[in-house]
Length: 307
Image 1 (cartoon, rainbow, N blue to C red):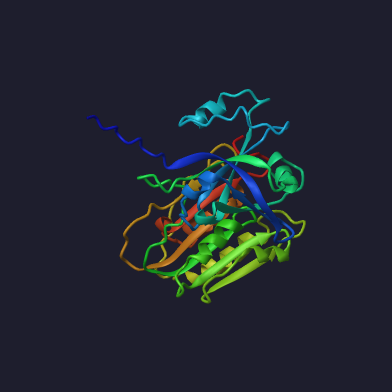
Image 2: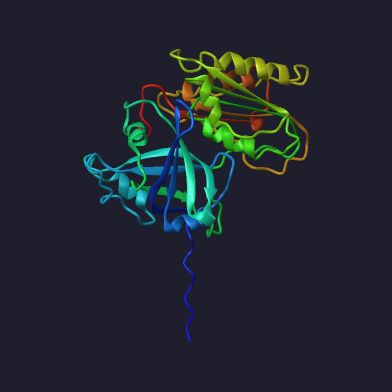
Protein backbone atom coordinates (compact mmCIF):
# COMPACT_ATOMS: atom_id res chain seq x y z
CA UNK A 1 0.00 0.00 0.00
CA UNK A 2 1.26 3.47 -0.83
CA UNK A 3 0.27 6.70 0.79
CA UNK A 4 0.08 10.01 -0.95
CA UNK A 5 1.99 12.96 0.42
CA UNK A 6 -0.44 15.74 1.32
CA UNK A 7 -0.19 18.75 -0.92
CA UNK A 8 0.83 21.83 1.04
CA UNK A 9 -1.79 24.56 1.12
CA UNK A 10 -0.45 27.95 0.13
CA UNK A 11 -0.96 30.79 2.62
CA UNK A 12 -3.00 32.75 0.07
CA UNK A 13 -5.65 31.31 -2.22
CA UNK A 14 -6.87 32.56 -5.59
CA UNK A 15 -10.61 32.13 -5.89
CA UNK A 16 -13.49 33.32 -8.02
CA UNK A 17 -16.02 35.31 -6.03
CA UNK A 18 -19.12 37.28 -6.89
CA UNK A 19 -20.76 40.33 -5.41
CA UNK A 20 -23.53 39.37 -2.99
CA UNK A 21 -24.51 42.82 -1.72
CA UNK A 22 -23.51 46.46 -2.07
CA UNK A 23 -24.23 49.11 0.55
CA UNK A 24 -23.36 52.79 0.70
CA UNK A 25 -22.14 53.45 4.24
CA UNK A 26 -20.92 57.04 3.82
CA UNK A 27 -20.33 59.59 1.06
CA UNK A 28 -16.93 58.02 0.29
CA UNK A 29 -17.36 54.32 1.13
CA UNK A 30 -19.21 51.42 -0.42
CA UNK A 31 -19.26 48.14 1.45
CA UNK A 32 -19.10 45.30 -1.03
CA UNK A 33 -19.90 41.82 0.24
CA UNK A 34 -18.36 38.96 -1.73
CA UNK A 35 -19.35 35.32 -1.71
CA UNK A 36 -18.29 32.05 -3.29
CA UNK A 37 -18.00 28.37 -2.39
CA UNK A 38 -14.30 28.63 -1.47
CA UNK A 39 -14.79 31.61 0.83
CA UNK A 40 -15.47 29.07 3.58
CA UNK A 41 -11.69 28.61 3.69
CA UNK A 42 -10.93 32.34 4.04
CA UNK A 43 -8.95 32.98 7.22
CA UNK A 44 -10.13 35.65 9.63
CA UNK A 45 -6.77 37.12 10.61
CA UNK A 46 -8.40 40.36 11.73
CA UNK A 47 -6.80 43.75 12.26
CA UNK A 48 -5.45 45.22 8.99
CA UNK A 49 -5.42 42.06 6.86
CA UNK A 50 -4.64 42.98 3.25
CA UNK A 51 -5.99 41.11 0.26
CA UNK A 52 -5.88 41.50 -3.51
CA UNK A 53 -8.92 42.00 -5.70
CA UNK A 54 -8.42 41.23 -9.38
CA UNK A 55 -10.92 43.11 -11.52
CA UNK A 56 -12.18 42.26 -15.01
CA UNK A 57 -10.73 43.89 -18.09
CA UNK A 58 -12.68 46.58 -19.93
CA UNK A 59 -14.72 43.93 -21.75
CA UNK A 60 -15.73 42.33 -18.44
CA UNK A 61 -13.52 39.28 -18.93
CA UNK A 62 -11.40 37.41 -16.40
CA UNK A 63 -10.48 34.62 -18.80
CA UNK A 64 -6.81 35.61 -19.00
CA UNK A 65 -6.30 35.61 -15.22
CA UNK A 66 -3.78 32.91 -14.16
CA UNK A 67 -4.80 30.82 -11.15
CA UNK A 68 -1.80 28.58 -10.41
CA UNK A 69 0.73 28.95 -7.64
CA UNK A 70 2.83 31.26 -9.82
CA UNK A 71 -0.17 33.37 -10.79
CA UNK A 72 1.46 36.70 -10.03
CA UNK A 73 4.49 36.11 -12.24
CA UNK A 74 2.20 34.88 -15.00
CA UNK A 75 -0.05 37.92 -14.55
CA UNK A 76 2.93 40.25 -14.99
CA UNK A 77 3.73 38.59 -18.32
CA UNK A 78 0.26 39.22 -19.76
CA UNK A 79 -0.23 41.77 -22.49
CA UNK A 80 -1.58 45.10 -21.25
CA UNK A 81 -4.74 44.66 -23.31
CA UNK A 82 -5.80 41.50 -21.47
CA UNK A 83 -4.18 41.95 -18.06
CA UNK A 84 -6.81 42.34 -15.31
CA UNK A 85 -6.35 45.17 -12.81
CA UNK A 86 -5.10 44.26 -9.33
CA UNK A 87 -5.77 46.44 -6.31
CA UNK A 88 -5.02 45.96 -2.61
CA UNK A 89 -7.74 46.32 0.01
CA UNK A 90 -8.39 45.47 3.64
CA UNK A 91 -10.83 42.73 4.58
CA UNK A 92 -13.37 44.44 6.81
CA UNK A 93 -15.08 41.30 8.09
CA UNK A 94 -15.00 37.57 7.33
CA UNK A 95 -18.02 35.31 7.83
CA UNK A 96 -16.60 32.02 6.64
CA UNK A 97 -19.60 30.07 7.91
CA UNK A 98 -21.76 32.08 5.51
CA UNK A 99 -19.14 32.08 2.72
CA UNK A 100 -18.87 35.88 2.84
CA UNK A 101 -16.37 38.65 3.37
CA UNK A 102 -16.74 42.44 3.27
CA UNK A 103 -14.50 45.08 1.74
CA UNK A 104 -15.04 48.82 2.28
CA UNK A 105 -13.96 50.61 -0.88
CA UNK A 106 -13.08 54.31 -0.89
CA UNK A 107 -14.60 55.89 -3.98
CA UNK A 108 -12.64 58.46 -5.97
CA UNK A 109 -15.02 59.02 -8.85
CA UNK A 110 -14.17 57.55 -12.24
CA UNK A 111 -10.50 58.42 -12.20
CA UNK A 112 -9.35 54.81 -12.25
CA UNK A 113 -10.54 51.28 -13.04
CA UNK A 114 -10.93 50.17 -9.41
CA UNK A 115 -13.06 53.09 -8.26
CA UNK A 116 -15.11 52.89 -11.46
CA UNK A 117 -15.71 49.19 -10.91
CA UNK A 118 -16.78 49.79 -7.31
CA UNK A 119 -19.20 52.53 -8.37
CA UNK A 120 -20.87 50.17 -10.84
CA UNK A 121 -20.68 46.94 -8.79
CA UNK A 122 -23.92 44.99 -8.63
CA UNK A 123 -24.91 41.64 -7.08
CA UNK A 124 -23.78 38.85 -9.37
CA UNK A 125 -20.67 40.61 -10.70
CA UNK A 126 -17.65 38.29 -10.66
CA UNK A 127 -14.04 39.04 -9.80
CA UNK A 128 -11.02 37.09 -8.55
CA UNK A 129 -9.77 37.50 -4.98
CA UNK A 130 -6.46 36.54 -3.39
CA UNK A 131 -7.27 35.90 0.28
CA UNK A 132 -5.57 34.17 3.24
CA UNK A 133 -6.32 30.45 3.40
CA UNK A 134 -7.27 29.10 6.83
CA UNK A 135 -6.05 25.62 5.85
CA UNK A 136 -2.43 26.72 5.41
CA UNK A 137 0.19 25.69 7.97
CA UNK A 138 2.17 28.91 7.56
CA UNK A 139 0.99 32.47 8.23
CA UNK A 140 -0.38 34.31 5.24
CA UNK A 141 1.15 37.66 6.10
CA UNK A 142 -0.51 40.88 5.13
CA UNK A 143 -1.20 41.87 8.76
CA UNK A 144 1.01 44.70 10.02
CA UNK A 145 -0.49 45.46 13.41
CA UNK A 146 2.06 44.04 15.86
CA UNK A 147 1.58 46.03 19.04
CA UNK A 148 3.45 44.67 22.08
CA UNK A 149 1.37 43.22 24.90
CA UNK A 150 2.41 46.00 27.29
CA UNK A 151 1.79 49.34 25.63
CA UNK A 152 0.60 52.48 27.41
CA UNK A 153 -0.96 54.23 24.43
CA UNK A 154 -1.70 53.47 20.81
CA UNK A 155 -1.74 55.96 17.96
CA UNK A 156 -3.38 55.10 14.65
CA UNK A 157 -3.46 57.56 11.78
CA UNK A 158 -4.24 57.57 8.09
CA UNK A 159 -6.31 58.89 5.22
CA UNK A 160 -9.37 57.35 3.57
CA UNK A 161 -7.35 54.47 2.11
CA UNK A 162 -6.30 53.46 5.63
CA UNK A 163 -9.65 53.94 7.39
CA UNK A 164 -10.90 50.36 6.82
CA UNK A 165 -7.68 48.98 8.33
CA UNK A 166 -7.85 51.41 11.26
CA UNK A 167 -11.47 50.42 11.85
CA UNK A 168 -10.52 46.74 11.84
CA UNK A 169 -7.73 47.32 14.34
CA UNK A 170 -9.94 49.42 16.62
CA UNK A 171 -12.61 46.73 16.80
CA UNK A 172 -10.08 44.19 18.00
CA UNK A 173 -8.11 46.23 20.52
CA UNK A 174 -8.31 45.15 24.16
CA UNK A 175 -11.22 46.73 25.99
CA UNK A 176 -8.82 48.64 28.25
CA UNK A 177 -6.74 50.09 25.40
CA UNK A 178 -5.91 53.81 25.58
CA UNK A 179 -4.90 56.10 22.75
CA UNK A 180 -5.97 58.07 19.71
CA UNK A 181 -7.08 57.21 16.18
CA UNK A 182 -6.98 60.02 13.62
CA UNK A 183 -8.44 59.71 10.13
CA UNK A 184 -8.44 62.37 7.43
CA UNK A 185 -11.29 61.81 4.98
CA UNK A 186 -13.11 63.83 2.33
CA UNK A 187 -16.34 64.17 4.35
CA UNK A 188 -17.00 64.18 8.09
CA UNK A 189 -19.83 61.68 7.53
CA UNK A 190 -17.19 59.15 6.44
CA UNK A 191 -16.61 58.53 10.13
CA UNK A 192 -19.64 56.24 9.89
CA UNK A 193 -17.30 53.65 8.35
CA UNK A 194 -15.60 53.27 11.74
CA UNK A 195 -17.31 50.76 13.98
CA UNK A 196 -16.79 49.96 17.64
CA UNK A 197 -13.70 50.96 19.58
CA UNK A 198 -12.57 50.94 23.22
CA UNK A 199 -13.86 53.80 25.36
CA UNK A 200 -10.28 54.78 26.13
CA UNK A 201 -9.38 55.38 22.48
CA UNK A 202 -10.39 58.78 21.14
CA UNK A 203 -11.42 58.74 17.47
CA UNK A 204 -10.80 61.99 15.58
CA UNK A 205 -12.37 62.43 12.13
CA UNK A 206 -10.89 65.27 10.06
CA UNK A 207 -12.86 66.36 6.99
CA UNK A 208 -10.52 68.00 4.48
CA UNK A 209 -13.19 68.72 1.86
CA UNK A 210 -11.33 69.80 -1.26
CA UNK A 211 -8.03 70.39 0.52
CA UNK A 212 -4.80 68.55 -0.14
CA UNK A 213 -4.27 65.13 1.42
CA UNK A 214 -2.39 65.39 4.70
CA UNK A 215 -3.07 69.08 5.32
CA UNK A 216 -5.07 68.27 8.45
CA UNK A 217 -3.60 64.87 9.28
CA UNK A 218 0.04 65.88 9.72
CA UNK A 219 -0.43 68.57 12.39
CA UNK A 220 -3.09 66.55 14.21
CA UNK A 221 -0.80 63.53 14.50
CA UNK A 222 2.12 65.69 15.54
CA UNK A 223 0.05 67.16 18.37
CA UNK A 224 -1.28 63.78 19.50
CA UNK A 225 2.15 62.15 19.42
CA UNK A 226 3.77 65.06 21.21
CA UNK A 227 1.25 64.80 24.02
CA UNK A 228 1.83 61.06 24.35
CA UNK A 229 5.62 60.97 24.31
CA UNK A 230 7.70 61.45 27.44
CA UNK A 231 10.15 64.01 26.12
CA UNK A 232 12.63 63.26 28.86
CA UNK A 233 12.90 59.64 27.75
CA UNK A 234 12.89 60.33 24.02
CA UNK A 235 16.04 59.99 21.96
CA UNK A 236 15.91 61.27 18.40
CA UNK A 237 17.07 58.85 15.73
CA UNK A 238 18.61 59.27 12.30
CA UNK A 239 16.44 58.00 9.45
CA UNK A 240 17.19 56.92 5.91
CA UNK A 241 15.79 59.42 3.40
CA UNK A 242 13.37 57.30 1.38
CA UNK A 243 12.50 58.63 -2.08
CA UNK A 244 8.76 57.92 -2.08
CA UNK A 245 8.56 58.58 -5.83
CA UNK A 246 10.79 55.59 -6.55
CA UNK A 247 10.95 53.42 -3.43
CA UNK A 248 8.28 51.74 -1.34
CA UNK A 249 7.73 53.43 2.01
CA UNK A 250 7.01 50.44 4.22
CA UNK A 251 8.59 49.52 7.53
CA UNK A 252 6.77 47.40 10.06
CA UNK A 253 8.14 46.09 13.37
CA UNK A 254 8.26 42.33 13.50
CA UNK A 255 5.84 40.58 15.80
CA UNK A 256 7.76 39.98 18.99
CA UNK A 257 7.44 38.86 22.56
CA UNK A 258 8.67 42.15 23.99
CA UNK A 259 7.93 42.20 27.70
CA UNK A 260 9.12 45.70 28.58
CA UNK A 261 6.60 48.50 28.82
CA UNK A 262 6.24 50.47 25.57
CA UNK A 263 5.03 54.06 26.10
CA UNK A 264 3.58 54.47 22.60
CA UNK A 265 2.91 52.21 19.62
CA UNK A 266 2.04 53.96 16.36
CA UNK A 267 0.48 52.61 13.16
CA UNK A 268 0.52 55.02 10.21
CA UNK A 269 -0.74 54.43 6.67
CA UNK A 270 -1.86 56.44 3.68
CA UNK A 271 -0.30 58.66 1.03
CA UNK A 272 3.44 57.96 1.06
CA UNK A 273 4.66 61.55 1.18
CA UNK A 274 2.35 62.36 4.09
CA UNK A 275 3.33 59.24 6.03
CA UNK A 276 7.02 59.98 5.46
CA UNK A 277 6.54 63.42 7.03
CA UNK A 278 4.74 61.99 10.06
CA UNK A 279 7.31 59.23 10.48
CA UNK A 280 10.16 61.74 10.41
CA UNK A 281 8.50 63.74 13.18
CA UNK A 282 7.73 60.75 15.41
CA UNK A 283 11.07 58.99 15.12
CA UNK A 284 13.45 61.77 14.16
CA UNK A 285 12.06 64.65 16.24
CA UNK A 286 10.13 63.10 19.12
CA UNK A 287 12.44 60.11 19.47
CA UNK A 288 9.78 57.41 19.39
CA UNK A 289 11.49 54.01 19.22
CA UNK A 290 11.32 52.98 15.55
CA UNK A 291 10.54 49.44 16.74
CA UNK A 292 7.25 50.90 17.95
CA UNK A 293 6.26 52.61 14.70
CA UNK A 294 4.66 50.84 11.73
CA UNK A 295 4.45 53.08 8.67
CA UNK A 296 3.07 52.15 5.28
CA UNK A 297 2.77 54.15 2.09
CA UNK A 298 -0.48 52.74 0.75
CA UNK A 299 -0.37 54.98 -2.31
CA UNK A 300 1.54 57.85 -3.90
CA UNK A 301 -0.17 60.97 -5.22
CA UNK A 302 -0.19 60.96 -9.02
CA UNK A 303 0.63 57.25 -9.38
CA UNK A 304 -1.53 54.16 -9.78
CA UNK A 305 -0.86 51.11 -7.63
CA UNK A 306 1.99 49.03 -9.05
CA UNK A 307 3.29 51.79 -11.33
